[in-house]
Image (tube, rainbow, N blue to C red; front, side, top):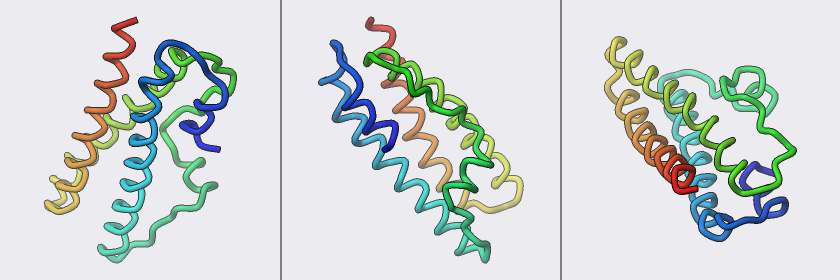
Length: 129
């Protein structure tokens, strides 16, 4: 079960209905970014190393807590994970720029914009409560 799916079954609160649609969109976006990055890696002659075990071993994102019981805690936990992901993507933009790979830098820029928008969304909900 994904983090987004567990939200539906374990939480309640004022934000629940408001964020459900956005959580669906966020989960779909993240899956699309995974595919885009894997496709780019293979287009460059690399191998997409995408098993769950490999992803867990190499992630910079902290494990998602399993004991969250309200919508506010979920929003905080997601924001705490989107922030380092956004930072990593911005660093990847710089790295691919230095390497002269404008196409990959453009891909990362597209992802960065979306991640920053979603982080803003999460943080805006936190400020409103």
